[in-house]
Amino acid sequence: MPVKLVIVAPYFEQATFLWSPYLRGWVAQNLRARCVEPAVLWGNDAVPDKYAQALKDPDVKGVLGAGHGSPDEFTGQGYAVLVRTGMQVPGEWKDDVFAPVSCLVGQRLVPYLVQQGVPVGIGQVTEYWFTAMGTGDGSDPEQDPLLRYFLYAEYTFWFKLAEGATAGEAYDAAIAEYKRQADLAKRVDPLTWWCLQTDWQNRKFFGDRGYRLPLPPTVVRTSVKVEVSGEREPLGKWDEIAVSGTVSAEDGTAPQGSVKVKVVREDGVEQEETVQLGPGGAFSTSFRFSWTANIDYTYTATATYLGWRTDAKCYATSSATATVIVRSTRAKTATKLTRVSAARTDDRVTVEYEGAVADEEGKPVAGGEVEVWLTDDYPARQYARTDGGGAFRGRIETYAGWFETSLSLQACYRGDELRMPSCDAKPVKIPPNWKAVGGIAGAVLAAILLLLVIAAL
Amino acid sequence: MTVTFEQLQEAARRVLEGARAGTLSPDGLEAFIRMVEEWVDGQPDWLKNSYVGYFSASGPKAVKRADLPKVLRSDPDFLMRFLRLLAGVA
Image (cartoon, rainbow over all chains, first blue to last red; front, side, top):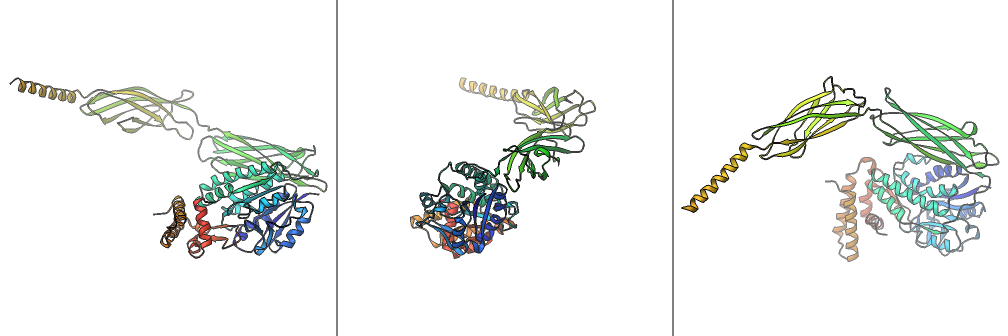
């Protein structure tokens, strides 16, 4: 018999209108994919007698879901109290993990249940806050751009537990996922980020960290091996990403069913496809991503086996990830400054330069734009263009102080769709303004002489 | 000028400190709620229409962000929980 989990899903006011559809839809579906049977107490079924009845089933090994709470009570539909501190805990509850989303139950109720023999409990010691748009039918968290952060984080615990992890491992994974989701949410909405931060900091674990769900032998664990390769099409302006792999079962049989393959580029562009497993559990597919720029891109491919059931067995879901970097096809270039000279006229300085740009094979880069500037106190800047032989030349006129100065002339070829940028620099010595310096020296000398004459008189 | 979330958090901490020290006046609370109003006004429309809520067995449980100032004025329980959330006080 499969392991069963009771999902409490009251549906009677705004908070439960937002959260509970995802319990009945997405959470239940994902537990089934992991060979765990959900028993959903939806709406008017989330009441004390039906709750007690559901937990009498010896196959039930846990309680999740959502419900309003207080330090001593967990409630269902219409605030009907389902569990209370101090109550006589029935024997059949004592092998059930208790971890619904509910405010304040971590203060007294969950510790009490664990004290009474419940193996594992997770409870909030403050309010459990969340944000949501109220969109979607509950089948996929992506339908609600705010609630999804909470759903992905919270149900990591139950999905990991259903995959065979210990309660401690599953809890740690959920907390890590809360932190990851909080980071993602921070860019979107600071209030959502703060709610997630507050929630994980106050979501406490009680009981046996080593506890595992007693998954029956009819559950066949699976594993996915995935490989990803990428190639840049130089003219067509796309990357071809090929994903292939195999799903294998621990009992040596060949799993059937399908794999969801999702490829995410580092700039957030993503594509996904569900592919049927072939002979031996093999799968392969490919995706075409348009460039936004001819630069290196990292692609991450995740292959998730969606599980499979026969009359005798349940193949559990599993997943694996692989990455590939598709390199820029732009050729390397070299910029060389071949001559730099500086001349002064009073306070004006003229710097003349010559240089050349070539690609990695030494071929001249014609028609390229080169940015040339003097560093430090003289931010004069201009653009030169390479001729047919890859050469560029020009002069920068600027003002300089009276004294000798050392500057640096920088030249950077800016690159284009097919070539990488490159730079070169050369020191430039600006001679002193002798006329000005001489004038000052003369004036100082004259002043000294005048003082000496006055002193002598 | 738009009120930032960090300014709102700072204001919530000041309100709670005032409440603890017995120096909080109705004007101080009203000033905080006006800050919430300005913060909400500065949000994009889709966030104004989103909900914020919790799973506690009393008071309103999830409210539209646009309605936050109204709810904070009319429901002291929600106000206190919201202040504690922003201030990071368990």
